[in-house]
Amino acid sequence: MSMDGKHRSFQEQVEKQPDYRYDVRNEIIINNDTMIFEEEYNVKVLMLNGSAKANGNTYASLLEVGRQLEKEGIEYEIFQMGGEPVRDCLGCGQCTENGCVFADDKVNEFVAKAKEADGFVFGTPVYYAHPSGRVMSFLDRAFYSSGSAAFAFKPGASVAVARRGGTTASFDAMNKYFGICQMPVAGSTYWNQVHGAVPGEACQDEEGMQTMRNLARNLAWMMKCFAAGKAAGVELPQTERDYKTNFIR
Ligand SMILES: Cc1cc2nc3c(=O)[nH]c(=O)nc-3n(C[C@H](O)[C@H](O)[C@H](O)COP(=O)(O)O)c2cc1C
Image (cartoon, rainbow, N blue to C red; front, top):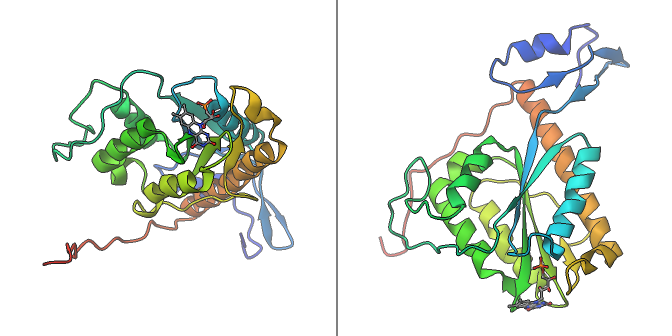
């Protein structure tokens, strides 16, 4: 970030952004016209474990992402869907600003957390070569009721975990939520897949774990860039919604 040789404190800039959440430790140092500063990014990643197994392979994969995020100075939470029944979307159209009209599972609780989060990782076990039915039902309702309010313009990534096959198809399906909701997608050094059958085996997939760590690094980098952009006054893009055609009219 160029400062044209002017020594101005980063705090000064931040103060011009009263709603901006940023925790600054040091003042700026100018070095070769580059502003260098140490900072804490007060941003948070919310992850979703789409397996009913709280400590299964999906969790182990997300945990590897989380550990690396922590090293990058970014806080995280792994939200457990658990084994309770999850409703699917009925298309009833009764969503409100509080989320889905059905409040008898964890979807609205997740949405409330999503509104406070700055980035996302959705993990799923692979079932019959697709994401688990419960994670799709859960995310359908979260996004249909609260997509723009909770997720738009925040980076996301998905992770698919399988014994052997169906990871890329599952990864593709999960990534569909990001594209329709104006969410930039973080990548890694392979498609985000980890292999393991029995809980715990995922940790033995060394390339899978490496993919998780690189995903975390890339997501952290994106989130820091977005935070820096916001601090510098870069506004969110305008969105047109004038047209919605259903092919026949
Ligand atoms: C109903 C069901 C379907 C499954 N289908 C597949 C599959 O299509 N491909 C595969 O490689 N593994 C499949 N598996 C294995 C799981 O993806 C694998 O055990 C994974 O590690 C489970 O993650 P978890 O421990 O987080 O639940 C299936 C498991 C279940 C229970």
